[in-house]
Length: 284
Image 1: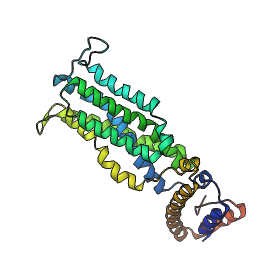
Image 2 (image 1 turned 180 degrees about the vertical axis):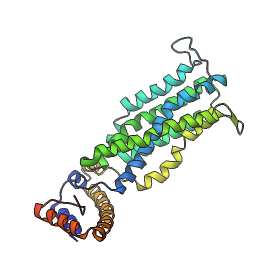
Image 3 (image 1 turned 30 degrees about the vertical axis):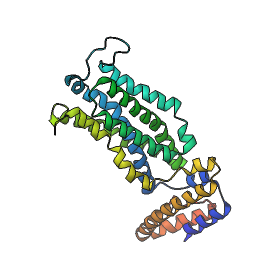
Image 4 (image 1 turned 90 degrees about the vertical axis):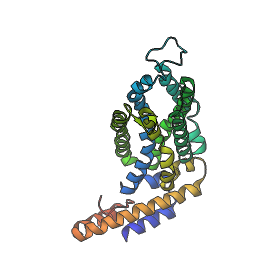
């Protein structure tokens, strides 16, 4: 098949990892990768908007006061917000370089686990000081994740369609806002199984620790990052696997199009041969 010959010829030419990724067409496989990574961003936004929705529950339970006496008054609700954003600052500024040092996939996984574990522990705290401490740790995880998610998506997707995939990831991420709002509306006013409703909203937000073990199985390390570290063999092996998935999906699409419009597919294939372009699609 024309598509398979083009892939084999490209492999012998040993193009860069970026060139191999950038030539790939948009497919469901890439959308699946983006969804998995965007779930990390989903929990970021869940956490950031959650504070506003559970604030009345935290104040109503007596854990915090509505007002703050001074700058370092941990009993005021402002410390609940401030401790989280202090953690985000540390995670972003001080630890943001971890994603360049240890890899996108490893840091993505670690940041999700840190945030999820810290949020789960925070849900059971009974004093403002201990709550603020665990909120600080959760903020560190979210701060690192803020950098990692965007970088990971941009490096795994082809440059021609990167904007489309970035927009799609934001669409997935923003669904967290109405979800946390509805959960808070339903849970915060009530006691559920002996726990305040706001605690359940936090516990649900910590579910990323469970999801990450399923998500990470289908997530490859960024081949662009591997190539930048001189790990060319690993990078090209990952791109080989990505190309195989994309080729299989595109071949299936080509067969469907061929059965529906055989003449048009033949014309497009002929155009691809005359232009000498590397293509993994049956219609451009």
